[in-house]
Image (cartoon, rainbow, N blue to C red; front, side, top):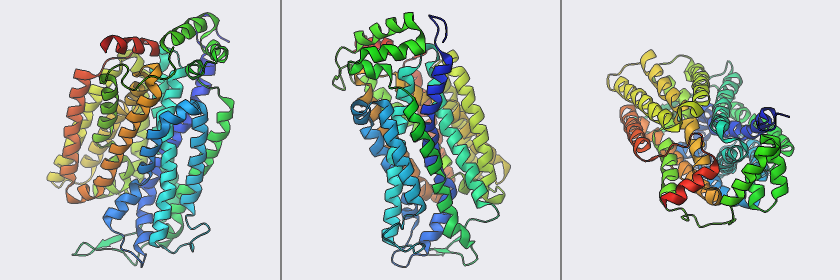
Length: 483
């Protein structure tokens, strides 16, 4: 145990690491499709009872995001009814079931290896189930960490969730790479009329088993996450909201020491007298800012790159089908996420978001220019990696930090749910429209994302308040005055 007025770093880090496994699964589940989507496309192109088009493939590649919207939207209800920790337990079950179902969607009802329209629907339902888990985790993990962490290291600890998300993506990029091994992704032919077909020379193992193994690999992580959640506490702020002040004080004492714990509990009770308040009890501005932070995080186009990375690198002229370049990008993303973790409590949230937006705009416009000049090879690959790296040191972690801390205690559950649901709606819009948009013109796609990056920088500069160093109760007082 630490000194009386200091926080217990070992305890906090242990609890945070368990919670961030939810972030790792968030990243794992959303990025596993990047390695599996070509195998899936080849598999469903063999169906005889329906035509598998680019539009349907866009739906398949992004169907989990429908679940993410649902999970984000209901996260406030779950966070209030079950509490933050128990909601994460439920999410871990959804991750596990989705991984098994995506691996073997034929279970009970269909013949294995025979693609049909009904099987396509079933597969996407399993992906949606996992998406609900992602939506819950995306909202509740940052909330859980923010409600336990001391204010002076809260930004770093919540940013660790983004590190876990990106680490989960890196892990699954590497797992997909190992699973693919010596095998190759299928070759998809396109006729003059735009009809897609599977090239007869394609590697059939990738179609039959490769994509299945990629999805089932997630089940192991989900099981570990669910088990470890039985060893972490409920958050003190949630316990105070439901009237369990003694339990809340016990957790606060473990985190902050006895003297500080009593001060924090008094502050929590002073700003949480009403267990439920209307969403706009503190005015509409705070809710609108939270929603727009979520919208801009997706409108700048990052997930179009993360979900389709191997295909994009391959189109840019990268060797080896783009899988190795995707792994390299994942490593660089990790490094730049660490930059954000180290600096978010030192430099603040706003400077990182503005710098990141400018860097992303430069990378996106560079990709657009490379496409307009028909440049292939190292330049477009570097430009894409720069674009992603600047996201990882800014909008990736910092947006989640702000969403977890900007709302007053008594509306946090509902407000976070709305902001996260908006984030997943725009994630789905961007991800599902990217394949046809990219097919039409990469220059138009990345030019559009670059413009959105510039608008995001202006929004942060003019509207978003700085939350560095403020307690969650300070934010409650801030919005009460601004109302």
